[in-house]
Length: 486
View (cartoon, rainbow, N blue to C red):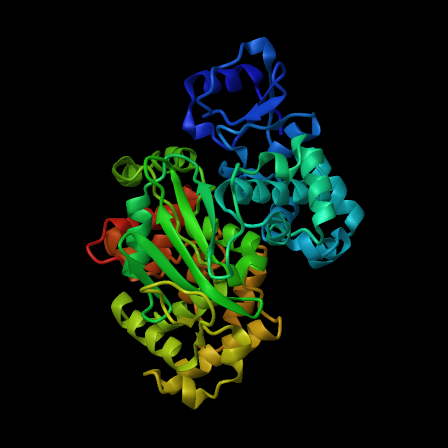
């Protein structure tokens, strides 16, 4: 990625939040690198060096600013990457694919060779996969060093390092100081019942009220809840259960995430998934400018400039919810989903908090092992129960891949091959579970109504001008309806 240094400097002088995460500035006189929104005194132009990624600034010898905290900057959306291979690799690395696995394992999962993956990432990002993965682990560790009182050894493992020695070496190499040197004076260890806390900044503009309203309106009883402004979610990760709590940060475009200590080994994955739930890395200004060229959407974009496409923490969960939502209202689908959680969910064990949900959504193997009768007893027809079970089997067996690294075209074809899954369901899964920005469920009654009662074919044709962000157009259209169907 090539940066225009003069344009970057103008954004730096203006502290323009729209460029937060788009580049970082290294200050030659201090050896520190910052975000463009940093409120420290703006350095002179000749003292600035600009980098598209934090890891490149670290490679050049700069250490992260203590004031603006570069590790909190919003990331790059998938559409920012030129090649699909690199975009998919980035998503996997974000979720910790290199914490326990090798570059060879990562490349194999992407259907390519380790050599080709290294070359592709180096050509596009200026970084190899190992260097990028290490930088992300160090960034998470910085957040935990500042935001928690966890012992350094626990921070090392929660950040994805296999040993404290490797953690110390990596941190010193990237930040020019040891973890002990940046630890707040007087910090002490935490008990097993305490939570881990991280702050995730979103690319501006970010409308927290809009995002949390979406979650509140779709919370599944038993698995999700709200306590005041805080969204609570029971979570099953790698055999461990716990609570993930998300609260809007006050006075800034960010969210605060608190995670049960029982889920500490999965913290990196959880942080990445929460980002994707809130679509934190999308660029609403860029997307909105494209959509607003259509007079139909221009007023909607102006009314909701921070519109996001809310995603799935658990892609399989949202795939099942899409099936449960076929031809029924959002409220009816939520009722059925709550019954499913009560009957087949996984009880949360270990540390929890007041008002937290008690059941984690059942994973694919658990639903695949359930009988059609058990699934149907929650109020589903026999054919709908069969669809849920066949979907679970396909995911459990690896015939259908439901995560944001999956190819949307191949996934759509695999979904359509299952009984009871048609175009609307497949496209909705692409949109919510896979986070595909160009997904568009053209058969949706709400979308067709918003376009004046057109047919599915007419809806599809009308949406062509909105590529490659048709999912965001759908979100804008749904937001204008009195009762959302999205």
